[in-house]
Length: 238
Image 1 (tube, rainbow, N blue to C red):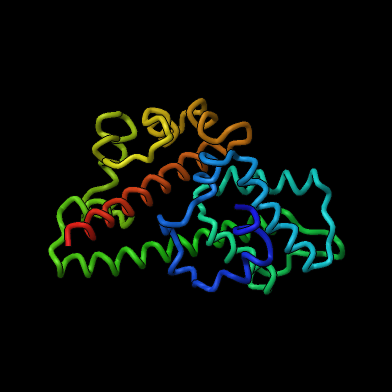
Image 2: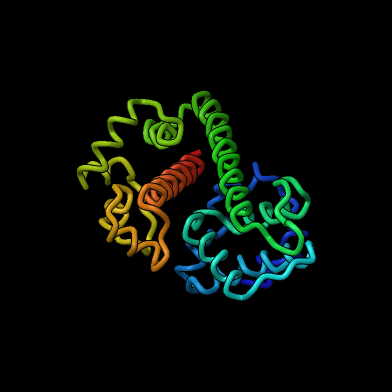
């Protein structure tokens, strides 16, 4: 897993554009890897990418700094899939993210800012893909359930009101997100989305991001998951 998805070779093999891989449910995320192989494998994949960037820039980083940076990435961006990671680290090398190396030091904060900007672009790509999909869905007469799932991302159909109701009531949460990923306690997902610190610690482990950032990450993940499941059902009905 680490050899296939980490480091320079994985970056070179990733020829697909962000549009093709963004929120692609067929590609495992860091969270998926953690569930199957353990979080240590997710950290090793990130570390392998970091090492390739450092070697490319001629910079050294202590093992402690490397581990801390990898853990920060895993904690805040566990929803990224492995192909998206390859694209991000390739951009670090080609200068698309600005200057990250000063002298012989890597600016860790600049790397995290670059990753945040990358995720904003990723979100824009996902929304554009869903907008295009909805246009096709209207022509083909997809079901109300599929349109509603897409509406979660696009913020239509009074989603704001339903979202707040879902945060306050578990049954409303199950209606708002009819598809939940296996391997996670539904109540823990609901509470974490609502900002409950204990539930966030349960999902993220010992190094969770801030409450607001964690809750937002859970919400994004659930949105992506439901849109993908709705898309699969729509394809199956054709």
